[in-house]
Length: 363
Image (cartoon, rainbow, N blue to C red; front, side, top):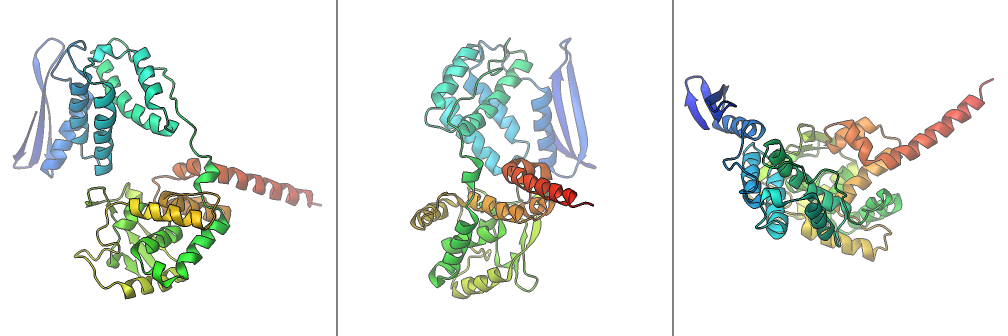
C-alpha cells in the first residue's frame, strides 16, 4: 500500500495477491489531498484486503480487532467514533477476549459473554457493544479465517430502556425549567444555567452548544448558526452530518436573556466561545439532574432529553415534522419519525378523530 504525489494530484496504490497467487495492483489517482488518498486506501483495504495473518487458529482476536480498527479509523471517522472503538477495546475486548484466537470464539461463548456483560446494563448499551464486535467478526468470517459466524442468531440481553414518554419533560415541566432559569439573574448569567436554557429553546445537541461562539449568535436576525461541534478532546470539528449545518430562528425571549448573559461575561477565550472551552456536558448534566429533582419533576432527563423535550413540544403543538427534522439537524425525516413515533401516533389518532367528525358533518 502506498500514497504519493504526482503532477495531477495524489495517488493511492493497493497491492494484493489474486487467486492464482500473482501480485496485482489497484490504483486510483486525482485525489486533491493526501488525506483523501489515505482515506480511500484504508476503505479499500477493509473491503478488499486480507489481514497479514492467515489462519483463525493462529490469530488472537485482540490483534485482529486492532488491525481492523486501525484500518477503519484511517478512513477519516469522527473523533466520537474513534472514542467508541477505544472504549470497545479497553472495556470489552481486553477484558473478555484476551488470549482467545478467532476460532475459539464460539456462539455459545459469545452468548455467554453477552449475558455477563449485560448485568446491570440497558439492552441498548449491550447492543451498541455487540454491533462493533459483530463488524470485526463478520470480516473474519468473510475473509475465510473462521468457518462460522458466532454472532449470528444471538440474543441481546439487558434491561429495557426508558419508556419513550420518560425521555421527555412534560410541557409544564419544560415551562417551569425555562422560567426558573430565565427569572434568576444568577442562573441566566452562569454558563451552566445558560446552557440548559439554550438547549431547552433551541434543541441543539450538547456538542453543538459547547462549540458556539459569539459570532454564531445574530441578535438582529434573531438566529443561531450551527456550523461545528465539540469533541471530547476539546477539538472543534464539523457537525455530525451535513444537514446538521443549519440556522435556527430563536424567540425574542432568548435574546433578552442572551444580552444578560454576555453583559455579565467579563472574560472570553481566544475563540469567543460562549462556554469558555468547556469540553463535555457532564457538569451541566449533573446540575440539571439536581435541579429537576429539587423542582419535583416526574421525569429526570439529561441535556439530550431537553433536545427531545424541545421537539416533543413542537410536534405535539402541530409543527410540521419536516421543519422539526431540519431544526434538529437530522439527516432525513425518517430519523425524526422513528425517534418520536409515540408522539406521531398520538397526533395521528387526533387527526383521525378530527377527520371523522368533519365527515359526519357532511350533508
